[in-house]
Image (cartoon, rainbow, N blue to C red):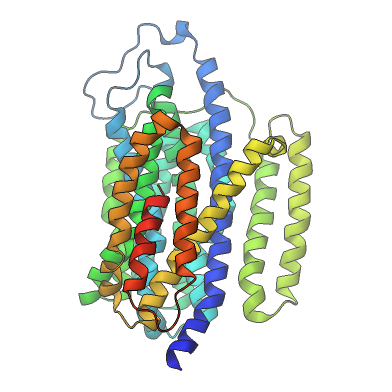
Length: 437
């Protein structure tokens, strides 16, 4: 009976977290489309007369030569990619590490189910809502500057979370970290696109994506090891040393970059995107816990009106923050929707897995993290396979294969019930690891 109740309590948070990750992934794909458009403009604007005769010195303490002015591909671009991957690593681990710390945090702080939901989603709300606007600001003024600022904000929020001693302060710390993540994520992708030549870009993106997959699996293991001898607050400190290393390395290894144009940023469109996205996420969290009246209904109305206003404004603006006309193309809209829905399912499944292993099967944090290792191993193998297959068969087929594998893994997870053992999770974990990269 106890296992049944524990399993039932997982249902609503799983759906809600999955929906929020869907919004985050959708925002990320919008940012990707925006970055591709801006990078094309930057390459067109970088005329030969401005770049002739300028070369980056072999060794320089702080990189000052903009990547757009380099005649040849940046010599240390793979080292720069390492910095970008480290930065991506911490913003993904910030969520996955917290999932195994949830039981200890709930007991220590006396969190209600609504409090725990806000601890988790206090990070996701600003991350999803601000990503598009902050990505555009960083693209115009300084992509590396946005990365550095994001690392500072994120690291500061992590230290704040370590010192927090109440639900309100933990939620506030997570929100600060979410703002930092909204700066970091689009900056890493835009710097990657600007730094790597087209011939190498697909391989670099595969490694960047594999880092996110590694972080999904590594977060619970590292957090579980810490929780053996330390409290839940130690999980916030996982990210601080990595953020400091990435911060210093960004000045040494990552060249400055910004768009090669000086158009005014569509701040109105950015503000509207923040309003409708933030209101939608708030409604999803508030409604199930406190009923579909009052604040939840108001948030739903604001989200609907904000979305309509955003689309209408972007259609009329000469330089929109997001070209919504792209979604009229079946290929673009279909691919983005398919990938977003895929990650909706994957992140929801991940949350379910970690919580089921702890609350239903009774494993502690470290045992849960160790039992997620098949996912990490499969991510490594999958990233190698993707890197080998993509140049040979094309991105379309590798992405499709990943989605098929992910569907198989999720279908196997639907067979899990209160009588299932860890052995029933091994095959889905391996297949899921192969799928997400």
